Length: 77
Image (tube, rainbow, N blue to C red; front, side, top):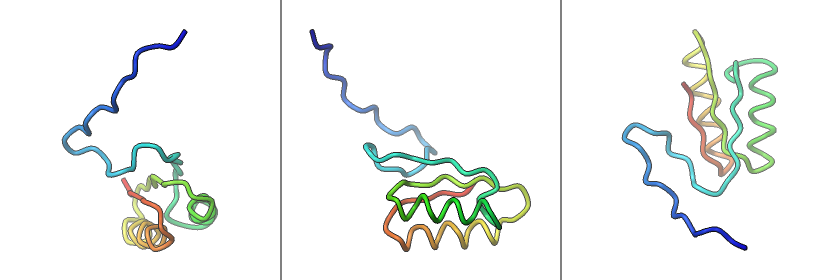
């Protein structure tokens, strides 16, 4: 018995720009050191990455850009 097919909901205003069917990894402290290394490894494995940071905005944006250059999506918040 299969359930009804549900279409993906439309993104909410202000939502993150991730593709619908790919896995997303959230990496806390993903701007520097171990968190950065983990975020880059996950990107290399094909996951979209959501980075969180507290005070390292320039590093977080640089890591986000490096992840995007690897062909997957990323956001930093």
